[in-house]
Amino acid sequence: MQLIDSHCHLDSFKNYDDVISRALKAGVRAMITSGCSGKNNETTLEIAQKHAGCVFPVIGVAPQEAMDMENFDSQLSFIKENRSKIIGVGEVGLDFHWANTPEQKARQQECFERFLEYAVSEKLPIVVHSRDAEKEVLDAVMKKGVERVLLHCFSGQLSIAESAAEHGFLISVPPVPSRTREKIIKYIPLENLLLETDAPYLGGEPADIKSSAELVASIKGAELGEVCSVTTTSCIRLFGLEGLHGSD
Image 1 (tube, one colour):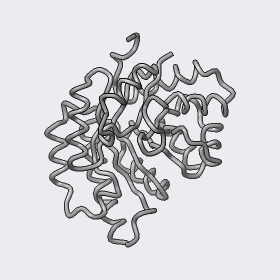
Image 2 (cartoon, rainbow, N blue to C red):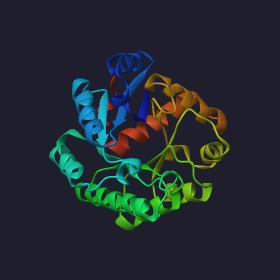
Image 3 (spheres, one colour):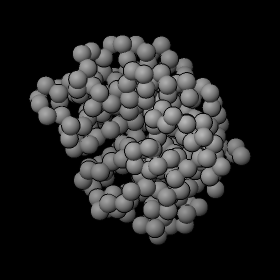
Image 4 (tube, rainbow, N blue to C red):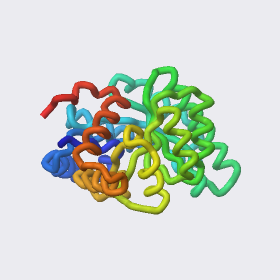
């Protein structure tokens, strides 16, 4: 039984070597670690290079960071310089929970669109943060023509999730139940769901990813092995990690 944590933040752990070791012992085949800005992106790449084969990086500028950032050129340039080292762009997106002014929302929107355009130009998947801005995020992604999309920790309306799934987008499920999340798990096809911990923010560590699989299995009335198999295959396809198939 293989598991992939499709979204975590290993750079937020001082003892990330131990965290990765515990995850591997717990049956986690791979971890997609996400940078958010500046130093986080640099550390994210360093961790992935140190643990090549089981840790894979995506880097971007999170909306909370973007709204107070004067310009995005340096981070976009950093991503372009390290294109060969990453498997996707993220996390990026919109978060209107924290944006208190029209100016902050505009900064988030500008940053998001810049990174969407880059992801499309490079045919890279994109990992999206969409708190309290789910419809706006989906509209922007579809307008830019992004094809490979992960809506991480999505908690918007079921109708928006259904529209995302119809477009082939994926939604990742953290190990934290909620009424909204339970509806999404119940009605969105298993093929459109991934597992995530968002560690250390929601799940404690990537080793806890099995709890996400158990949550999905319980709500869908599915076998745990099926959930692990389908979500792993979908994650491999999204990020182009076909070399993981058949690995021990």
